[in-house]
Image (tube, rainbow, N blue to C red; front, side, top):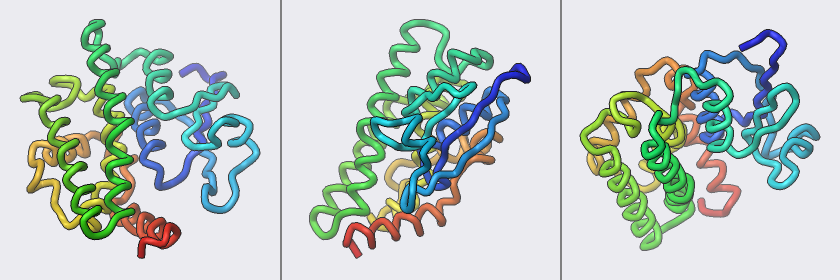
Length: 221
């Protein structure tokens, strides 16, 4: 990256969506600064200015210009710094990657949140729904090591950050992903062997403790 370019990431330490962006930046070998936001206490003026519609992290400021929404940011990073490429080279491969990224965005985090928000029969239904989503993702990966095929790619970046909260879902849902979806669990472990993932992966225990705080805030406990 040219020395006159500046990257600033508006972050929240336990955000799985920010983790996506950090992994993408690491894959590209890009240096950046972080401004930590206090989402539970007081968001900064810069966050409100940079993302006035949602005031959510992550926001990536590239030479002062804000790029918002994590999947959109990862796509922006891949287009702006095309090597190594995260999206497939062929148009069909890119269309498949965008489809599954959209599926992940619409399904995974909300389904996981339904687990820690629920009790009783609702919890059992939420757990089963979450496991069903993971099984669909296992099917999408097929016999390959990654969602992009033999190489770590765009869909892997979009999904692996969300898995930092999966330990909390397991604890509150009373299940083990390794037992229910062994192929998916193996994919998580494979991704965590990459430096870009290992160095930016949120401590699952700390994520679990944070979800416990959210449960208290939402009156679930």
